[in-house]
Image 1 (cartoon, helix red, strand yellow):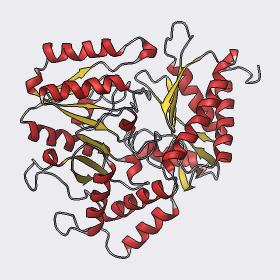
Image 2 (cartoon, one colour; image 1 turned 30 degrees about the vertical axis):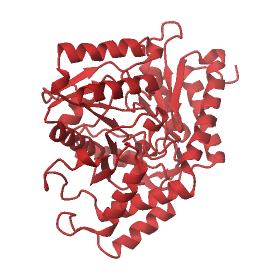
Image 3 (spheres, one colour; image 1 turned 60 degrees about the vertical axis):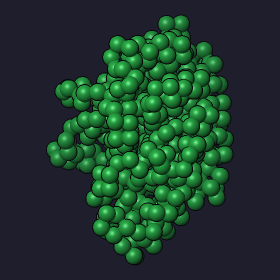
Image 4 (cartoon, one colour; image 1 turned 30 degrees about the horizontal axis):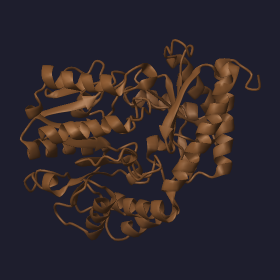
Length: 432
């Protein structure tokens, strides 16, 4: 029995089945590489689901955390505040363009940021209704699950969702949902389900994560901004997966030219340490009463130190520009692969910066989803020494999220392995 298989046996006996995982048990990692319990090396194009934008164990992140560990590891900000928290909020306020002065709140997880953004929006507007969008993902808690527009594995069998949450269509040109049709769907929600004057906020991902890396058309985001302004509704942009330089901008919403009222951040913000944030217009953020926001572990000193170092690395190593370079390299390779006759199963390639996905279909004419093929490609990639993830509301897309610190040599090696995995999964000769 290998070390991996032994750990898998122990996991099945000890860990709740709902906490699913791969059979690759990590023992060490560095930048874009990971080694498992059997001593096998993998190239990591999952990056902890877009957490490791600065790679595994970036030296500057690790040094910042070690320095903080020597001072203190926890105080609870509500008991004894500290300078690093204030400094990080100052930097996030400057990084997010809402068109007004900002305030920030530090938390622990992405869904915690989302829930607090909803709380803030409800307090600021005096309204309770929230409109989210089909295919969106906002977390696994009860409220996060209600906001999420994907049934499996996030909603099925978990009972009724909190009230006051409604879903409108998200535009998806590949599957025939135009911007006009999506806007008509939103209009129907605001006339049939939830009155605009009862709506506190719209919440939307500019690039849908679990939904399949669907990129919001700028005209749709602009329309959301106009509708929100007309009715006194707040616009919350969820940047948990798409933020922190991942798409070739600090925030993915910047590609649209639209200014949000509130932004949620997490994942790449901490460089591997758990931290999240809500950043938004001061006049909105400051409405909740003192003590109404926060948490015991919110803004943990070690994670705060990591996040401040992450911001330094993004700037000093030009990771925004690097994300664009990586994305162009990935798209070029995938386009060449898709153009081969044997690869007609690749129906669409999409994304921004280094947040790229390709959708698998039974054929390009019907565009019928093929989730089985996506799963086989991920399995073949793992066997070849490459970690990738699937996504999409029907599970038929493969997403690529390399660390923005990956070298060109490592990226090319990873894309070679991906080509081989696609060919093996389809049962075709890649050279045909």
